[in-house]
Image 1 (cartoon, rainbow, N blue to C red):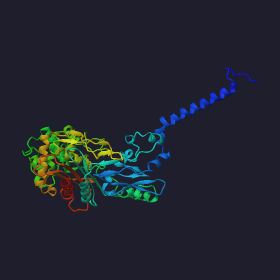
Image 2: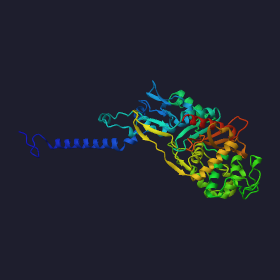
Image 3: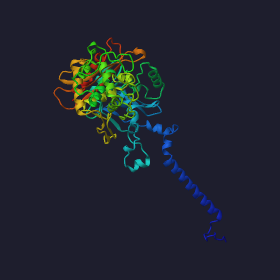
Image 4: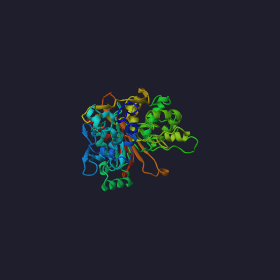
Amino acid sequence: MKGNGPQGLPGISITGRRAGTFCLLLVAALCVQATRVQVFEADGLNGNSANQRAVLERYAQPRGDILVGTAPVTTSVSTSGRYAYKRGYTDGPTYAAVTGYSSQAYGNTQLEGTEDALLTGTDGRLAGWSLRDAVTRRQNPGGDVYTTLNRAAQEAAMAGLGRQQGAVAAIEPATGRILALASTPSYDPGSFAGYGSADQEAWNRLRTDPAQPMLNRALRQTYPPGSTFKVVTAAAALAAGVVTDPAAPTAAPFPYVLPGTTTPLVNDTAVCDRPGRSLADAMTASCNSVFGYLGVRVGLDRMAATAEGFGFNDPRLDMPVRPARSNFDTRMDDSQLALSSIGQFDTAATPLVMAMVAAGIANDGTVMRPQLVDRLTKADGTVVRRTEPAVYRRAVTPEVAGRLRKLMTDVVENGTGGSARIAGAEVGGKTGTAQHGVDNSGTPYAWFIAWARPAGSTAVPPVAVAVVVADSDATDVSGGALAAPIARSVLRAVLGSR
């Protein structure tokens, strides 16, 4: 007859108890390890480049769409390869500066990058409350991105730029909504959306193209703004009280010799070649000598502060895509300040920021934060986030802005911006022709910034625009000849679509 165990339980030996305890410890260790992996290390493992499960899931269902108005400009294309779907584009070159690309081999840029989690369905805001979904970890359908673009304005911008190298940015001044964002030459993001040999060939061809079609010239390229920056200098002069009456003679001498040098600041027209030209006359004729003189009178600190009010020197101007930083130096001598005040020396701007200059003046001196996304939604249309207008900075007072609008209107009606006139509309603008290259040997950059509203209206103009033509075969390379007609077509498109 067998005896009892130590605790009086029949049939259980000390060895059996030890084995049971060991098994319990193993189970506990497995639970701890599973918890560590699934909870504390989940993000790291999901993001590990060696984890193909996440990549396969990413392309196992259609990607959400990017829309202009109510129409998608993207698609999802089913494939017979390893991945079930790849990205497609309905009119890729027209919207590439906005959408960017989504490539199985080369990643994501622009809205395809900033809103990737929503588009792929991994954004936590898309998750439902279904117990089944929680247990099965079913991936949510991709959400949609509704842009702020005006289709007519975008198409007008691309058509106007044509085969030239250049860019357009258009903004609704009262809200900061971006109505157009164009860059040429452009490219088709769908040509390398997969991972096959044809995609690799397309990618290599685009990356080595000397015309740089994948460079987003509206957001990622800065240019000397030339005489369009004179609007900022005029704003600073009026705000600082250096000029109190735009129609009154200034103390600007002629010739105006750059401070500390023997070099005169040359004008582009003989109309400017006399002392005491008023701010109004200097703006209409685009007199370098007057604006160089006024910039030095305003002083570096106040000039920099005014420029920054319009978006210069801000490295984090996200919308949500991040543009390149536009520059106005905060350390320079007076001769350099004079040159900077006419948009030369180291002054450099993206078309986006120059559109913000025009938009701020149109909006009584208040610059709104630029926004490219109207709303984000789930696949069923439920709004996840809606973008509300937000003040970026108050660059100048309404009184100063009103005077600047009058100056810009005179440029179009009586000065160098005549090519931007629109019947039945009030248009204010400023031309610019910026020199660059060694000894100014490069083809000048042709600029135009403007705003427009219906004639007789006192409301905030519904559109402001900046255009730069960076390389053209035209014989007359000037802002008035090249950039102003493009701006006119974009302004007309917005006015006509209202």
